[in-house]
Amino acid sequence: MAILEAADDLLAERGFAGVTIEGIAARAGVAKQTIYRWWNSKADILFEALAVDAAEHFTPADHGDLGRDLRDHLRQVATFLTATDAGAVCRALAGQAQLDPEVAARFEAEFLAPQRDRDRAPFLRARRRGELAPGTDVDLAVDQLVGPIFYRVLVTRRSVPPRFTDALVAGYLGQPATP
Image 1 (cartoon, one colour):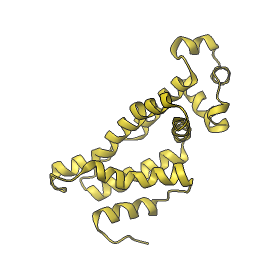
Image 2 (tube, one colour):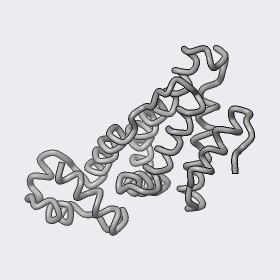
Image 3 (cartoon, one colour):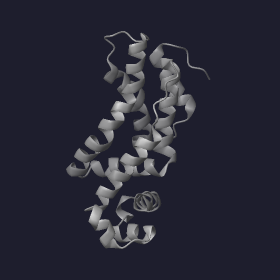
């Protein structure tokens, strides 16, 4: 775990290019050979760190109400991407994915696919409770609500305050946004 935390910390401090196996080993207080026994590259370490952090950060809230579940979930997504070392790892790997097809494939398989399952969960629960019509396009709903958060974080590098995520939910549910 110290190795994964060291990788997170270094990436947050130095960016993707500034992370090295040597640096991770020094920060974690282990030998490089220890790292190479478990991982082949810094990307392997960062992907594992991201997967562990995302699984720990996202506990699906089930408040019994779609609006409340979505507000909670979107706030979690925004906080994860903007205010955690794991979010820095995510942003760095997303950037590297634009340059490296292997990183892109791994980012899709190891982060985006499991994250999409977590993003779908509030909708699927709401469908089971009868809050959503059986034919609701859950993937489109996820794109409409989660996509703007990733856009703000990855493209415009703007903040994602709760009023923004709450407005997304209100718009999706056809409710007036509160100031």
